[in-house]
Amino acid sequence: MNHNLLFSIGIPAFKASYLKECIATILNQTYTNFELIIVNDASPEKIKNIVEGFSDKRIRYYENDRNTGAENVVDNWNKCLSYAKGDYFVLMGDDDVLHPNYLEEFDIFIKEYPAIDVFHCRSIVIDEKSNPISINQSLPEFESVFENIWHRMNEWRQQYVSDFVYKTSALKMNGGFFKNKLAWASDDITSFIAMKGKGIVHINKPLFQYRRSPLTISSSGSVELKLKAIEREAIWYEEFLKTEIPQNEMDLLLKENIKKRLPIYFKKKSLETIAYHGYNNSKGVFRNFIYWVIRRKRYKMSIKEMAYALILALKKKEAQNYS
Image 1 (spheres, rainbow, N blue to C red):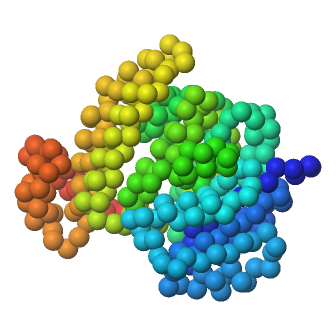
Image 2: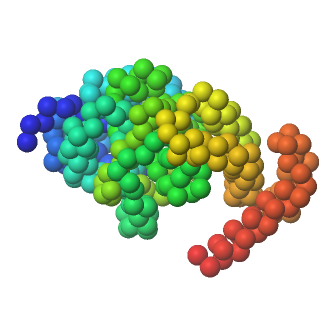
Image 3: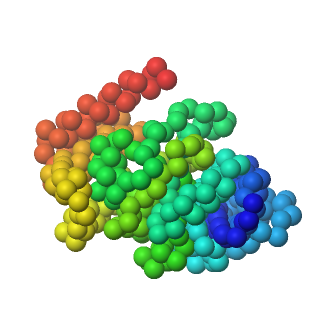
């Protein structure tokens, strides 16, 4: 095989627990023309020792002077991107896993669709012991940005930052990964920006394994920060819908449907964030309910909506008794 395309794979490293396994799956790719960029985000864990355990000239290791922190983790994503010399870029979670044919399969589709700026594959979700939990939905080979957003809003698309491959030049031209607090929806919005006017190509094979863990960024951070991030996400959607022009009747219909659903979608997202993250502490469910009722006006919530969040929280707590 002529491996003439150079891939850059960036790991914004902070957690050491699964880093060795993560690096090993990258170095074991059947497609060999890639560089592995590892940026240690001033971690207190032994990141450097793990990296030094591998002897491979494709590895480029860097260390940040200061930790970007969970709130600004996208800064380290973009630091990885800034070092990239490849034609295409992959951002890899430090605890996730690549299928041996990941790059090889993407190479095939990239050569078939050279004008596309973003590609995506199906994924398998694994647990902390690397056991498979679930597999994501099958995908069409091509989607417009409106189709992708519509499916995502209706929860018919599960996707993660590392199952996307970007044309490096386009990603850099777009300003890198979209920065939001706690990387909230940063992967979604970055991909939507790359899809504008061109769409996205999907590979209907599970080439990536996403590790579900309480250590992930989305499982950390204050609820207030997450709610602010949702507000910024909503603003991006509103601006996108004002400026992006549908290219056919189907996209026009989807755009109008997205526009109508937007207020309900973000209201539900905020309430679920309060229910699933705002009650997960030692205060107790009903003390948390009072806490959020007092603050409801700040987030334009009614008492009825706070009661809905309480019901969701109680359901989650009850479900945990059987898990």
